[in-house]
Amino acid sequence: MEYNTTRDKMLLPEYGRNVQNMISFAMKIENRDERNRAAQAIIEVMGQLNPHLRDVDDFRHKLWTHLFLMSDFQLDVDSPYEIPKLEKLKEKPNLLEYPKNSIKYGHYGKYTEKILATAKETKSPEEKEFLKTSMSNFMKKLYLSHNNDAVENHVIAENLKELSRGELVLENPDELTSTNTLLRSMGMNNGQKRMTNNNNKNNAYKQKQKKKFKKI
Image 1: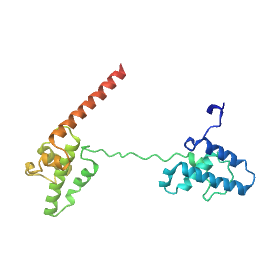
Image 2 (image 1 turned 180 degrees about the vertical axis):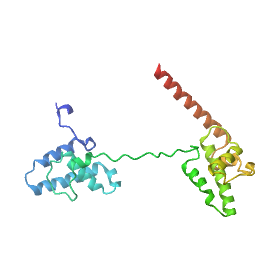
Image 3 (image 1 turned 30 degrees about the vertical axis):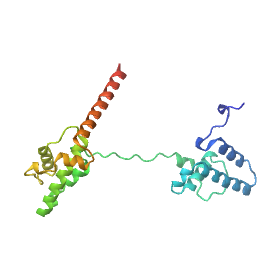
Image 4 (image 1 turned 60 degrees about the vertical axis):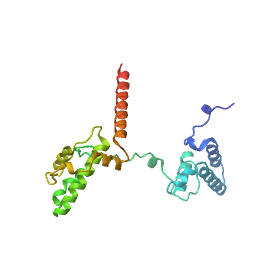
């Protein structure tokens, strides 16, 4: 009986042992034309075994890359694509810098703050009034989406004034769209929100208890 521990290591196990054996056999074919035909046949089999790759851009190029990788770059055949270099495949991608700018209020998001910061550029009184009304109701909606407690209109008014650097001032915060109306537009009602808040609190408590037990 032959065990996997005694067999050669499979470089790409998702293709299975049979494909690996086919590649090993193709590497032993001396005639180049026959070897090329064998490589083409193996590519067709690999494509059938992984139909999800058909949704990947230039999936046949990916299959040829896998073919050479599984042969440890020892298979000498004519490829319709440039033969990849092992060093190139091992290159690590450049690190992406994480945004370093801080957000004053996380539940409003960065772009809300950016929009409000440019409020002074709006000169038309009508446009400024529209910006004030639409952004304040939008902020209230964001607040309700992320915060557990009910939001007070005066809090939205204060945040609006602060983030717009005093350019947008709500004279009467009570004229904002009601909480119930906003919740309905979000597909929720007060009862559902209370249930959601309770579930969030319960989940937070469970996570806290798990961390406590891990420390013990």
